[in-house]
Image (cartoon, rainbow, N blue to C red; front, side, top):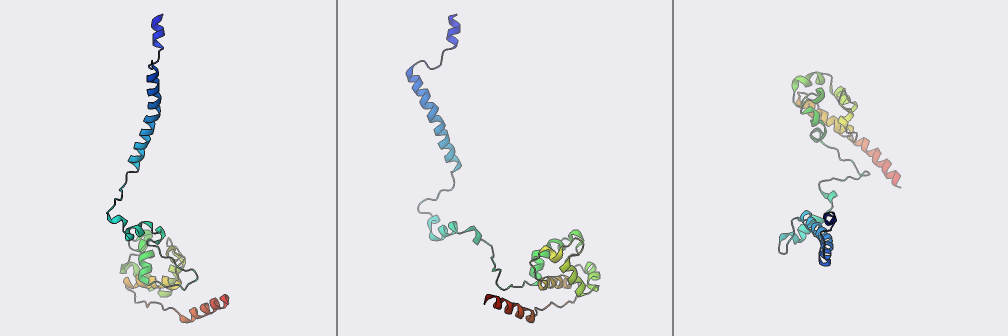
Amino acid sequence: MSDAHDEHESAIKTPKQLIVAILAGFLVPIIAIVLLVQYVSNDKKVGAGSSALTPEAVAARIAPVADQGFNFKDANGPKTLQSGETVYKTICANCHDSGAAGAPKFGDAAAWGPRIAQGYDKVVANALGGLRLMPAKGGNPDLDDIEVARAVVHLANAGGAKFKEPEVKAAAAAPAAASAEASTK
């Protein structure tokens, strides 16, 4: 029966062992956490004497993210019209370079021939209103009609057309400026 009593004894037999076990119970997790934090946060540390503390480097690190490549425009300011080539590269090229969804490819005279035969006004109207899988204005409602027409001329002329690029009518801009000026007074 004494053998059964020995089986239930603790590994800690002296007060010194008890103190060591309690300290280890606290210190081991704390040390493990400190080492883990050091491992996770071990990044490139900037040392004294490096070029990382120059005013330019500091300014680059604290510069707002919004200043990196974004162009903000004043909604109340005058609209700057884009060229046909710019509109084509940013909007139209997604489909017209690859021929996606049956779009006539850029420079493909055979595909553009029947469209050019319909005439400038019909081709521009299709681009403005959308046709089959092509959304109106190529999916960008912020484009001005003149910008879309310029892109159509750029595309069609690459396919063999001889369309003239539309000009911005100065008379249309004058009443808009006058009404804007009247509303501010």
